[in-house]
Amino acid sequence: MSVKKVDLKNFPFKVERVPDDPTSAPHDKTLYNGYDFDNAFISDLKSDLKTNSVVVFENVFSVNQLPDVPEDFTPTGDKFCSDIVNRAIELLLKTGQIPVSYRSENSGSLYVNLVPMEGESQQAIKSTKDMRGHTDAIAHALVEEESVKGISPSPNTVILICLSNPGRTATKICCLDDVLQLLKPETIEQLKLPQFMVQPQGTFKDLEPLINAPILRDNPQGLRFSHGKITVDKMSSNAESAEAALEELRSIVSKCYEYVVLKPGDIAFINNHNAIHGRAEVGDHKRWLLRMYAINNNTVCYPANGMPSYVLHP
Ligand SMILES: O=C(O)CCC(=O)C(=O)O
Ligand SMILES: [Fe+2]
Image 1 (cartoon, helix red, strand yellow):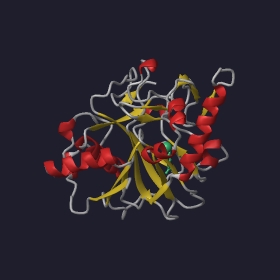
Image 2: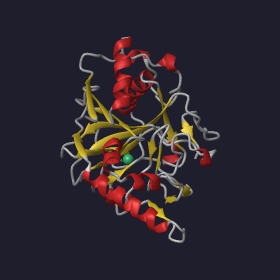
Image 3: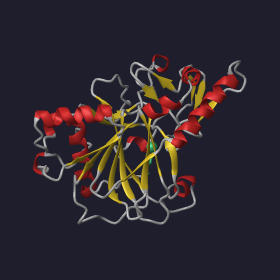
Image 4: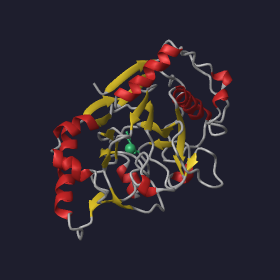
């Protein structure tokens, strides 16, 4: 089982102890103490996060007073969203993680709206469509990747906060362990070689592609994946084997999806190093998720100069 559900119905959140603005001090643990979890609960949570690709916290908040669904990626900073983001931050801190953002995405905003967007831009057109499986921040470092010193790591966790999902759009999850069972051993070896070119995710701007990067690594285990943004340098002497390995990976990923439908009030923690995520089509439904990133405490990161402490370079 790669999707674990944790119901927080019986854990009221003590909002009065949390600052209004989650961006003011997200790393100051003393400010976040909204849940009374005992040590056994926290230790179960941490092990759930290690052994599952996704942990869905259910009934974290109520959507009785939901504001109008926005039409843009950039959050407006209203109190409804910051209160909910605070709960997500509290869950992160309790499980040994800290929220982060990247300077290259939406000027480092701590969270973004995933909504059907107005207009004719590429981003707007894509916003109502399905999304093929991928990991996030693929052109950042893969865990402790030595060859990309100075580039902060990709997030350990992608956090999806569901405010509205009237069309019951499914979130697709593919577990790395399932993929590894089906890949040929020689394919796995190819995927670990530094021979791939990685273009950044569409929403990350002014970011260089990675060259000579691997897709897979172990100790610690990590994966970067995208159907469209990872390619092989055609001139390389090993291009044929690398291309075949990439094609086999794409094909096996497509066969391994599990589906989870997030409900309003759910917060999903998706492991970004051992799982691939995507979504089914949104269509004209007013779906609204907030998306945030987090990394494990004590991970070496490079803060972006002159930005709030949670914003990473680049
Ligand atoms: O809309 C979704 O459910 C997922 C979006 C996503 O994966 C992303 O923005 O990277
Ligand atoms: Fe994503």
